[in-house]
Structure formats: structure tokens, C-alpha cells
Image (cartoon, rainbow, N blue to C red; front, side, top):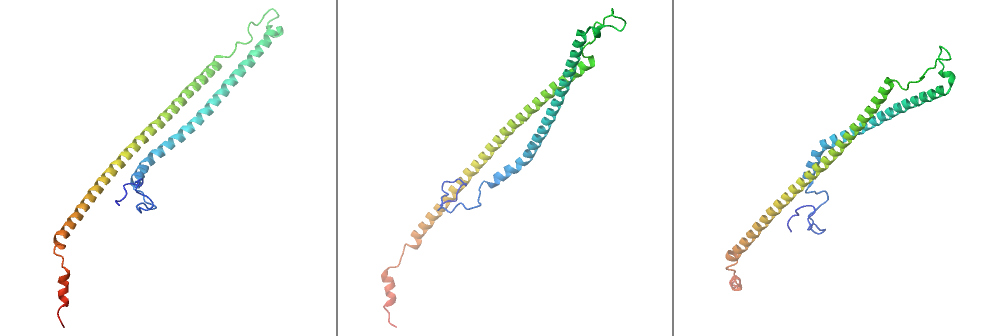
Length: 212
């Protein structure tokens, strides 16, 4: 039986004795592919860790921004409440210059610096949210590119293995043809030269007729 073509050769049954423990015809191509993938794998996982750390930082920044906004809103509500209480109390609205002088507005709301800080925090939160979405999209794009690249590499490896298999089968066929031709030539030679004048029984009997 000719040698097996690959590890999946259907001729590799229990009685063929062609496949043994530890043998792997595709190990060289597989190891080469795995070695080429090691730098890409390390870069990929490092990028994953970096993105994970960045995501945690963005979440903390978003939480701090939310707390600052809530605190500003609380301060505004407290001030608005005090203003309402003061306006409802006539004594609080009387000017220090006399009972006929009324303070028209005891509270003018949040000052420009507080409003500016809130707007800056809101804008910062919007930008951080946008940046995080962009990084997540880049990460997803990188995953897709990686899947496509691995699929292409896999196809190339499969094609190379298929080409090697066909080459092996072609060489094996040629070797079998050459061996068959040599066997036919040997048989023809034996029939034509060696077995042409075979001695008969009379030839052997003549050696037993003489006396000693």
C-alpha cells in the first residue's frame, strides 16, 4: 500500500500501520503559522488591555462629571428655594435704608462662572463620550480586520497544503509507475533469458548412470 498522503487519509485504518502516535504531516505549516501569529497576538491583547483601562478611566471621569453637575444643580435649587422664601417674607424684602425702600431682587440666580463651569463639564462629558465611542468603534474595526486577516491566512495555508498534497500524490504515482515498469522489465528479462532453456529430467538423470 502506498504511504499516506495526510493525517486525514481514509486509507489510515487500524490495520494499515501508516499512522503512528505523535506523527503529524501538517505540523511544520501549523507551527510556522502559530509563530507568525505570536507578535500579532501580543499586540492585540495589549491593545485590549489599554482600551479596557481607558474605558475605566472614562467611566470614572463621567461619574465625577455627573457628581459635579448634580452638585451644581443642588446648589442652584437651594439658592432658588432661599430666594422664594425671602420673596414670600416681606421683612426680608425691606431695604436697610427704610421701610419704603424695597429690594427688587434678592437673588439673581447662578453667576456666570458657575454657568461656565457647568457648560464646560457638560461639553467635556460630551467629548469624552464621543471619544469613547470612537475608540470602541476602532476596537471593533480592529477585531473585524483581524478576523478577515486570519481567514485569509487560513485560506492561504489550506491552498499550500492542497498544493503540497497534489504534488505528493503526483510524485507517488510516478514512483509507482516506475516501479511497475521495472518489475515488468525484470519479469520479461527472466522469461526471455533465464527461463528459456530450463534443463529437463533427462539432463539430471545422466549424472546417475556412471559407475564409481
